[in-house]
Amino acid sequence: MRKILFFLLVLFIIIASCTSPKSNDRVIKTEVPNRPDGQTDVLQLRSEPIPVVRVAFIGLGMRGYDAVNRMTNIDGVEIVALCDVIEENVKKVNVELEKKGLAKALEFFGDTAVWRKVTALPNVDIVYIATDWVHHAVIGVQAMKDGKHVAIEVPAAMNMNEIWALINTSEQTRKHCMQLENCVYDFFELTTLNMVQQGLLGEIIHGEGAYIHNLQPYWDLYWNDWRMKFNQEHRGDVYPTHGLGPVCQAMNIHRGDKLNYLVSVDTKAIANPAFIKEKRGIEVKDFRNGDHTTTLISTEKGKSILIEHNVTSPRPYSRMYQLTGTKGFANKYPVTGYALESDAIDIEIANHYENINAHRFVTKDVKDALMEKYKHPIAKDIEETAKKVGGHGGMDFIMDYRLVYCLQKGLPLDMDVYDLAEWCCLIPLTEISLNNNSAPVEIPDFTRGGWNKLDGLKFAQ
Ligand SMILES: NC(=O)c1ccc[n+]([C@@H]2O[C@H](COP(=O)([O-])OP(=O)(O)OC[C@H]3O[C@@H](n4cnc5c(N)ncnc54)[C@H](O)[C@@H]3O)[C@@H](O)[C@H]2O)c1
Image (cartoon, rainbow, N blue to C red):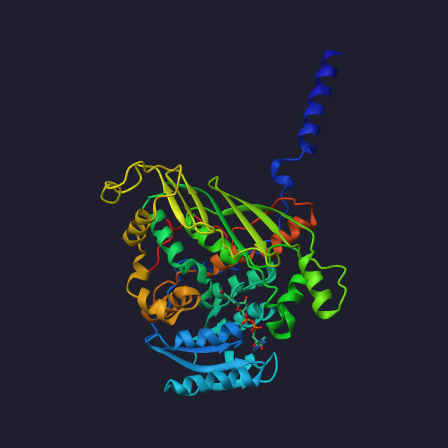
């Protein structure tokens, strides 16, 4: 009898252990395609130096127009082709080039497929893509297949198929595929990154970022209403890269740590359907994108990230950008400042000040002294030009300048295709989480095994 009881007990334990969910079972996983034989990762990818970088632009709306202007302020750049659906957008930019005494670029316009002639051009080094979201990845993939490097506006990819297609194509063709994430080049973010890399904030354990920008005054300006349409059809954080990019860089994501999984929560959609009803007289019953979406991410090394998206509420602009470290704290919005433990701060900066501790932000003069001391090396030489040329206060110029600088010197770019993947994957993965009652969703290792090969983020010099 005791033997039977013992046998039943063992049987019960086996059955129970098989049926009770393992912690991993709760995580929804998406398919990770196998890397084809012979294909390797593009970490630290270098191409042959390109002394004069020939650029073709596709998408010349509000953002693309400004991008061409910035590029004309960089030495060693030739603008060789301009493409947009709308003829007037192309002509307008060529007039600007002529006014600056530059050669006219080849013109392509007329429909949404004319870009194929541009990626096929022989004398182009890089295709710069600033179209609406749904054309980004398809053009990027073809451009790399046609032998060009690509730079793609944010978000560069809108779903997992597009993300994997960009990764696989970059790995197969050995062409750069960089997302044009400008916010990592903001002076505060760059300076803070330098502080982090020099250990001033200790180990970063938590980061926050956001895209909080009331777009109500701008919805009608977008070509073909592309932005509202995407929001109408998709739940989740559809614009995560400005908030997530700078935090991932500070945390060395895929350079010693990796994003593991996320959970997302959203509110109902009120303001956008109301806008459509009021301004366009259309009743939308199933507007998918909630007014406010909040996402939490956990990393392999035990860190957390909070990301928010809100493009409809009456709130001041904010990308949050907040880092919590073991020795200090950095915050961009709404109050820009640093809080530091007294022993973290440099004696030459601190010796005139009393009571420096992390209970409050350092005073403005200490902050200014810190920002001067820790100015990022890549910003030092070009800060003045960047402020003059502009583009969100100069950060857009630094982004373009760095892209061209690295191509000219044959250096790895500051952001690779895995950054693109990690920052864009929130779009499809938050939607999956929300459609499953905020279930955790795995964030794949887009390097497919290489996330721990590099020892931290270093911008090539
Ligand atoms: N990084 C930033 O700070 C920032 C700021 C604004 C916009 N953006 C991004 O820039 C991109 C463009 O935004 P925008 O504000 O200029 O929008 P927009 O609507 O003003 O411009 C999009 C342009 O793309 C053109 N276009 C669309 N499909 C095309 C195709 N298949 N071939 C050629 N041209 C095509 C349209 O004719 C239009 O002129 C978006 O991805 C947006 O998210 C980034």
